[in-house]
Image (cartoon, rainbow, N blue to C red; front, side, top):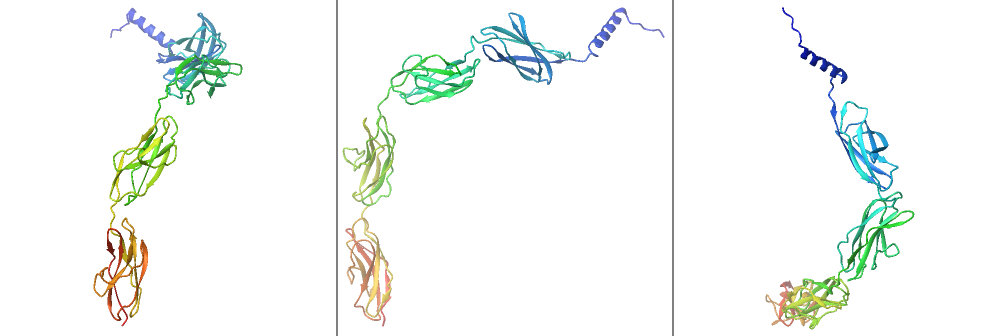
Amino acid sequence: MQKKFLSPLQLLFVCLFAFCCIGLEGCKKTDDVQIACTLTSVKANAAVINSTLNPAKQGVAVQLSVFLNDSLVNKINRTHNGNTNFDIPGLKANTDYKVEIKIINDPNLVAEPCATTFKTLESNTPLITTSPIANITPAGADLGGNVTFEGLSPVLESGVCWATTVNPNIANPRIALGTGVGSFSTTLTTLNPSTIYHVRAYASTASAYFYGADLQFTTLAVIPTAPTVVTTVPSAITQTGVSTGGNVTVAGTTAVTSRGICWGVTVNPDITGTKTTNGTGTGIYTVNLPSLSPATTYHIRAYATNSIGTSYGADEVFTTLPIVAPSVTTADITIFTQTTATAGGNVTSNGGASVSALGVCYGTNPSPDLTGPFTNDGSGTGNYTSPLTGLNPGTLYYVRAYATNTVGTSYGAEKTFTTAP
């Protein structure tokens, strides 16, 4: 068999492949990693850089280099665990810096270094801003601020101060709202209407106070308003009375000096007609109207008055009940002899008019009434007793209670008894 030999070109490729594999540990494939770096905070003399790895490798050796004018000024070596902060001390104020983060001592990881730039603050003082004024009313507004950096000394107090002159300071009215870095806000409610105010956020350290920009705003003018009142729906309606009232929900511009109910037989009664007076101020009040006419339609409105004027609730309509004959029940006959018996009744309602007479009607025929024998046991309502005398022995009697008002006479149910023989 004839032997085959590699050509000079094929032999060259074999040698190169063998050399590469030996130099790269058997041609082991490397891992690609992306490094990101972000400025987290900056002061006049220090900064914090946050770095992330994607994918988030654990225990990766990395190096952060700090450059000033392209000259290396600091190196920081750290073990990176996927998300790591680098504190960079010893910087100069008001200076541009560049930082670069790269993986070191790991030939199996391939990653492009990340880089970012920043400028340190001009001084070692806090950085504070005054928030825009919002929700302005006649008596106040929403104020606030934001401490974005503390500087070398911690911020012990932050808040807002205000005045009617430019650039207010802590000698003017102020409110402390926080400490350290962060935003803060408050709502003022004690300012004067139609007034120009100036406001500044402030921050204090152990040695000094610092201020945000002066912002100006004007409180709104006060619009005079009368009270707001609601009429209570009528209830407990009788022939001569009703229960109602009102609720002053808003006092208006000034205090409520009078409130109550207006009523009459025409729509929308007002305080020029019949009315009650039921105190002052806001809140619920109850009114019982007496001495109304039976079977009459009335209109009622709650009212409330302050120095601006009088307001009314909705017009509510109701009709008083008509007068009817009384309601009466007949009592059982409890005691009877050959010639006497004890009867009675109970007037449970006068029907809307006074009961002028009450008693019992009795006789030997069913449904006795006032055309036959009867007693007269007074007037009004409630229980009463009616003695019966002059009866015949051994006789069946029929008894009914009665009550009379201006409308007529009503009778209770019929009761019977038989005298002793």
